[in-house]
Length: 453
Image 1 (cartoon, rainbow, N blue to C red):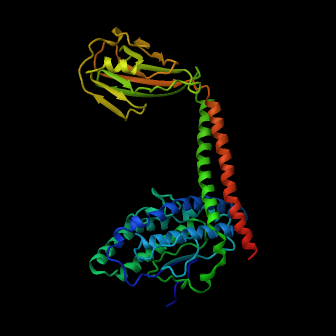
Image 2: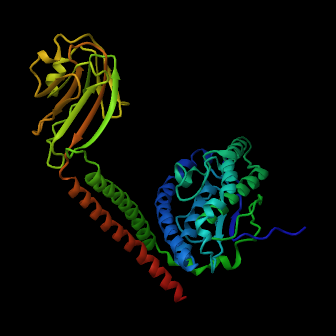
Image 3: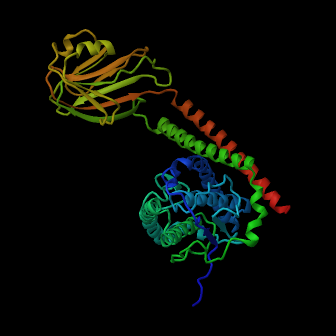
């Protein structure tokens, strides 16, 4: 029978002959330092994969220094997963390194592709869809790549067939002291399939992953011994360069958030205002209580960035008269003491607190606590005081009866929003430039070192 062709992504695992009966119970804790470091490394992996995408798209080549870094992240992750709950195949603590460690039981390598298709990078995510269905059954979380599924790559063994079989093996190990070899070989075969698909999605090969379950610890590509034990290229990624790339990726991610937020603020400032120059948000509220109030604003003054704050309230029934008032929070508490009312947090209407009680002693228009007030049918408008203070907004029926159905709108002129948006955009641009430098410099130096080998 003809042996299956080797795949460029080679995954090897050698189970320990003797495993601790109980250590697997605490490996989640022992592996936490690795999970912490890998979380940052996968930030860098994602950022460098984007760089590689454009390099392949325009040049047909995967930059070798970036390739070696990403292979190192895959290798490190495979060692941790094999030690932990993707296999439980070894009790040897994983080393903290991107480099190949020939003596460690779990090993991974990816053959460097000299040329890659310019156009295939655009559709690999689509071509891999059948594999994603299969690997989703294996690991129960779908894609295993750069944090794209709920918790990132650490959801790998959170469920699915791998998780079930590893749990069975752990229970057998606990009571017998032996890891069933058939389960080990089957689990490693599924892990290998997942890794191959992950590497394909990371653009590291154009060779489509095979639809086959290569069981056992030895890959069809043969042992990773021999020349793979001394790949000098792995030593180009020193600890300092790795830290620089990770820091650059985190800065770039932060910068993208700032740039997106700044652009949204600038768009709102230019196009989101109404005819009176207010930025507004509204919602409809219904309650069977006597009053609807907001949380106290807190002793924070309304600065020039907020500007004039306006509240509009209209009853759902045009014939109903409503009362809207603004008063110091302490006086509102005294007025509503023992009254059945609702405290509203935000405009979503989902976060509320109901206060049990009875009717207010006097209708709202008969108390003199209000700093600003409006009442009647139709839309009622009040403006919050421009001075600092701990204010509460109160909405009631004008006659003090229970049952409210109103539409409320709050708006602010926010005259400083344009300057805030500009500041956020400038900060994002500076951070993005800094992140690009932190990524580009170590990649350039690693590439230069490769040319000198």
